[in-house]
Image (cartoon, rainbow, N blue to C red):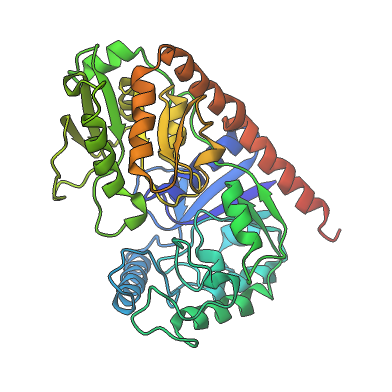
Length: 423
């Protein structure tokens, strides 16, 4: 069984990481699995690209830049990711695509596969599986919905677009997707229950079959280290209560919820039973040119961390990982933190409740409630059995998201789809 995974990028973004991790897990469980990307950033020799030659790379860059430019030009400055999918490339005649038994789609925006080129893949008469890493596949362009329900109908009247109306670009994109999907027989994988429920309300794909299968990660890489020793690596005193967060304010990612993090930390610092000198904040993944806010606690900025082994030690050094995300499918950072036995404090939103069990391996705060987010941090800060919560964090990943478990669920799906093919 040859499985070919298709993604726009190799390791640039959460979908790329999830795609590569799944392929590695399948390979480790005896499947001939391969990843091909539209544009390759990394050096992993196991990942191939459709843009090998200088001309192909130039065309790919043109597609990517054009798609992003026009989407940005037509959108309001709402910090909402949006794709028009006007630019793309046909891949149906590529040898790797033609030789695959299963075509597994992941994130295919930014100039890679338009609805037209997606529909072409059905001509190959192979089972197609599509993992939805965000909402774009069933909307008129947006990747993050923020409560907008226009996708229940046929989009249009889009709150993201400058020129909004019944026949706007979102509605026209919806129609192009409808036309393509009517020609396609593909099976949907939703990494979270939240995503699966969203698909059911979609006017485009609400009647399609959906399997809820989570993403996975490298449990032998993201693993617990002795907390005191991990803190020592980052020159943090072992008695400090360390808060870790994985992003900084972004001009493009409103859904990351940074203002709620800042407000929650201010609320926490004013609590009578919290000593600010006992707490240290560690931030990784921030952009060097980002404007840094003032935090009420001593703060260490680690910047971008390239090696996963080093990132695992960051998680292990923390007593709590804080993510104020407002809409996320199944965020990698939450799973990585739990795998390193670090409890997570987050809003009850998206796929996060699939990973964080309230008061067991972390704390789920009321949506958009900074005060409750601060309460969750204080809960861990004062908890007398914090080590038990840390054990539950690691156990929850090994039980539900380990490589062999997620691989087995995908293999079962692949085999089922292959058995339904005409002999």
